[in-house]
Each structure stands twice: as structure tokens, then as C-alpha cells.
Length: 308
Image (cartoon, rainbow, N blue to C red):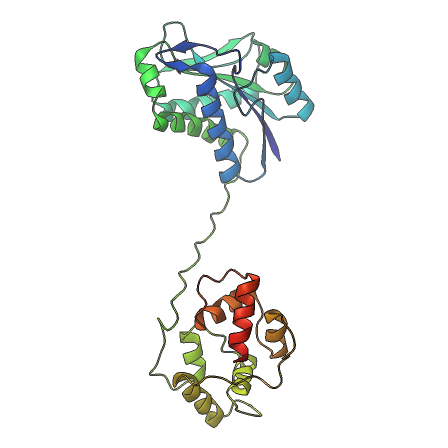
């Protein structure tokens, strides 16, 4: 687990630099929060702690103490520059070498690539957060708040997003972070009867076409419900069952099922049908119960429908 401490510069009574209608403390919190959110949502095995998550005053000593006590692997301090210049630059502590400078090189490259700010280079300085943190640390200066062109960029949500993404890409390269595998989207659930194969002579194919379990146990339970006794899967029994279902015959109560239970799960088990949520959702749709989420009311309604 890679532990990254993110420090949005300034905050609370300390606004940081100001200019062109902007405050450094607000911008740093925006960028830092997006860095945190991207890392947490897109990468595995990364843990984030922030020095502040809102507009609050946090002394410099409290920031580095929190990072040191947490055992962070990396300290990232996010700032906005001032003083008449323009562009992006970042700092490590004076005299620091690898791996800190290696991390700096990677993050610097990625931020410059995406931020749309000119490159002011990689530098070193005796800043408190760089000096007092016991882990590799980097302080980034993301444009000049008192430079009109930089300030206009910092007012754009897309630029803030790109600055944050640059930091994230650099951190991912620096610590070999593994991207999460995106979840496959759930296939759309067909409406009842949408894919119904009315022309088939196979009970198995027909049940599949209406999204119903076509296993032998499920067919046996259906046969019992439709009054076909001693079902063994013969051609005649399958034809009878297919015709009854296609003709819209209403199944009668299953005499072998548990007619006393008030649980649809227990009832389905008693007639040897799949009682999983996915199958109950299918059964609900087939019985006209839309938007099934498994509520008590829906389960009671489904139980009554299944019992006939």
C-alpha cells in the first residue's frame, strides 16, 4: 500500500497569494481534492491522507507531524505562485537526491505535459514542509495568481482538472501504481416478452428467450405449478408445459411447495427454484412487478404471484 500525504497549501485565516479575483487557498484545495479523488477511484493499493479537506487553518508543523506520524511514503504540497512570473515549477529540499529527485522528474514531466503552463524548471528550496518531512517530498507551484494569463487559466475547471491529472499521472509512474480494472457494464434487462421466441418447439429455448431458468429442476417446478405431475422431462411433458406457458395459462399453487411460509426465498427453495436476487428479479419482471429491488412489499407481492 502506497501512502501519499497531500497538503493543500494555506487555508483558513491564511489565504496565501491573491490576485485577479482568486485566492491561493481555494485553488490548492480544488487541485488537491481532485488529485485525491482520481487516485482513490482509478488506482489500487493507494491510501491518501490530506492535511486539510476544507477551508481551515493548519500550522505548518501540524502538517508535517501528521505526515510523519502516519508513515507516509510521499509528501505532496500543492501551491499557487505569485511575484510577477508565469508558469509551473516544483521544489525538493536543498541537497536532496534520489529517489526524491526521481519522483520530481516524473511528476514535473506529467504536469507540464497537461497543465498548459510554461515550464519554469525543477528547483530546490529550504521550505518547512520539505525540510521537516521525513519522507520524500515535493512542493509544486501551479501558475502565478498575479499573472493575468495564468490566472485566466486557473479560473477554468478544465485546467484545474488537467493540473490534478498531471500530478496523478506522475505519482502513478513514480510509485508504479496499478490501475483498477473497470467494471463491465451490466447488460440491459429485456422487458418481459421482448425476446420471446414464440416459434420454438423447445421448452428450454423458450424459457431462455423469456429470461427464465431452463434447468431441469426449474422445469420440474414449473410443471408442478401447471399441473403436470411426475415430471421427468419427456417430450410429451415438455410439449405440454410449453403449450401451457405459451397459451398464458395461469399456474396453480404448487402442492409440494411450502404454502405456509411468508418468505419468497424459502418458497422458491421449497419448489427447488433459484432463490437468488437475480432470479427473483427475473421472476418479478415476468409477473409484472417492475423495478424490483427486493423490498418486503415486492417480495410479498412476488410470493402471491408465484403461488397463484
